[in-house]
Length: 286
Image (cartoon, rainbow, N blue to C red; front, side):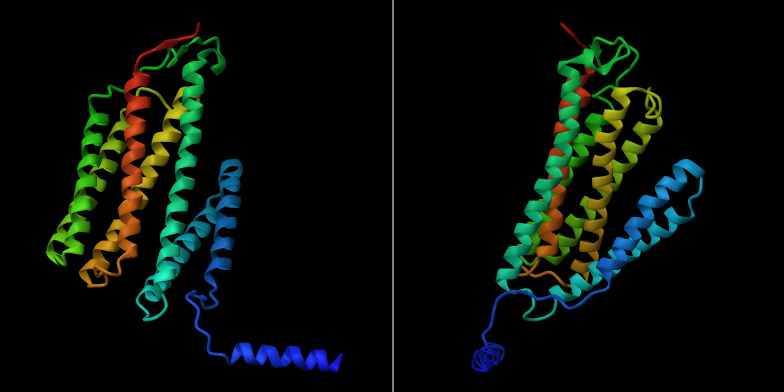
């Protein structure tokens, strides 16, 4: 037994002192995951207290903890990306795979909303309340050729400006990079403003409006939330680009923001086509 224990200890010493290099990034211990988890718990429990007892204190505290955690955690990730030898080519490839899988999960998130919408569109009698038409006869839908088509043009244009910024980065054109990013940010803010205007003039309400308003506001509202997140992502990239933190060889942060923004563009095209345009024509159950 002593010989076996000695051999194991000797083997461990050899491995530890071998100096063998590996391409992985072993992150330093961080307090942010547990702090973020506490903040998330406070947010969920705070929503319950706010909904049932009208108390918003815990919800506000939880939201502040979550936003603070997001800021300092992402700050640390940005610092890691600028530390020589930390983000090896293997790590950068892994980050790309991670971002691709994250976007795939977001796609499935929106698939649920589209699935619900088309379930009621194909089988309008399932919505209850004696309705056999979709959208319900009590609903006046949005004109797709008003604000919705304007927002479509805004997002399509933003897709070209973010692509222009990417090409400027690869060509070491710093001025073009900042201009393209700035225009994309302005277009994202314009989209959010137009959607807020649309919601303020909505002919139906989310609360007590039935199935159609629920599906409509959840699908378009969550997309609007993603636009806000993507715009924030791009604003951070603009400041990083201004500070000279992106190079043609190392710019995954910008690349991830561009991927996310193109995903937001594509989802809106489906929303406009399926909900605003195709969904404006009543479908009667057979």
